[in-house]
Length: 418
Image (tube, rainbow, N blue to C red):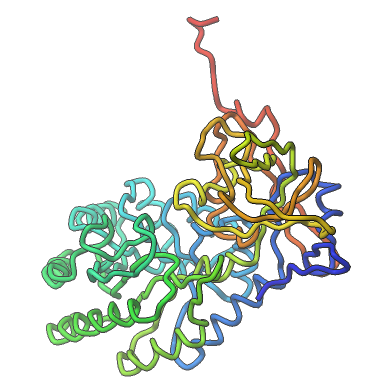
C-alpha cells in the first residue's frame, strides 16, 4: 500500500501532482509520502500489540531527520550502526533508552558517545568488541548494557550481499560459541547483560528463516537462564521484505503472529528493527529524460539520475519499476534506463519493456524509499539530490539539493601547491 496514484493519467503523491513538485524543486529528487510512512509504522506496531515491544526503526534504510522525527513522535526508537546515526537520532529527540547500537566496527569514540548518551544497549558483535566496551565503560565510570548479536547460521534466502546470519557472513558471534561469551561477559565489571540479539538479513520474503532463527535463540535463552544469566530483551532485528516486482512477502500481521506464537512464553520485551518494510514503498525517485538513443542493437533512455543517486540496481541487480509521471497513448519498446555516470554499471533498469519515453519527460522510479538517498554519493562530483516530503496538499523540502560549493567544502590545497 502506498499513496502514489494516477489521477487523470498524472501521478500524484497524496494530494500533490508530482509534476508540480518537479517544476518547483527541479530533478532528480526523492519524494516521500507522510501518510504512507505513518501508516506503515502503525501497522507494524499494531501487529505486535499483544507482546511487550519496542520498534527501533533501522536508520540505515533512510536517515533523513524528518523521517526519523516522524517515527520518534510515534513512540518509536532507533536502531543505529554508527556514531553519525546516533547523532541524527538524538537531534530529533529520540529517547536514548530506545536506541540499540549494532555494527561490527564500532570505533572507540563512537562507543564513548553511546555510553555518554546512555543508550538502551550495545549489540556486541565480537569478543574483542566486548572487551573494549567494558574497558571504555570502566574509564568513564559507567556500566554498559549489552546483548550479544548471535549469528544463528540461518539462510535468509535473500541476496548474498544483504545476508547477515550465515557463518560465512562477518556479522555477530557464532551461536555455538555464544554461551562461552555470555559467561565471559558475566565476569566483566563494567557491562550488564540485558539481552540477546539476532539479525539474519535484509529483504527476506519468507517467514520460515525468522522462525528458524528464533527457535535457536529460544534454546540459547533457556541455557542462559539455567546459568543465572537473566535476559530481559530479545532483539529480532529487521529484514522483512517488500514488493519491488513479483515478490510476495508476508504482511507484518502474519509475521507478528508467527513470532508471537513461537515465543509467547519467553517473558521478554521484544525489539524489532524494521527499515525497508516501513520506508521502501513510501518513496520514489523522480528523474527527467535527458536523451534517447539507439545503437542498432539496444535502445537507451538517458535520465538525469544515476547510480550515485540510487545504487541498488548496480550493486544488487535490484528491480525498481520505472513508469512515466504522465501517461500518454504511445507504444512500448525494450530499453535500458541509464544515468549520466561514466560507468557501464550506471543503470536504473536493464532490458525492460517500457513506454517510449521522450526527451524532457518525467519518470518515477518506484519503491525507492529505502537504501536510496542513504546510499547516495558524490561520485563524478555530482551534488546529492533533494529530498521532499508530502503531507496532504503540501510538499516540504526536507533536504535541499547540494550545490557545487558543497562538493569542495572541507577540502584544502596545501601551501606548497599554491
